[in-house]
Image (cartoon, rainbow, N blue to C red; front, side):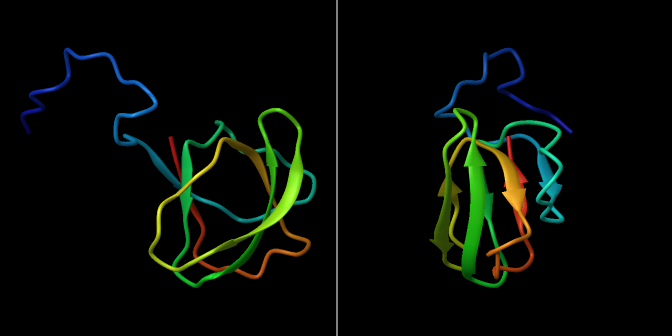
Length: 86
């Protein structure tokens, strides 16, 4: 595979290069802060941001939702197929 952009520094406006499927947890932080999240089944996602704010957000299926999250909570999360990108 050729990556014409591998010599460029990635920034927050760059597309994410890494993806991880998430199992929501009220006790465990993500291994890496997200840049955005995506869900396959829309619904509520309870998050804690990297600055410690916690809220329940609605995320539509298939939409990339930009948020710097450190935790995706199980409680109050109804969305399914959650993937974080960073």
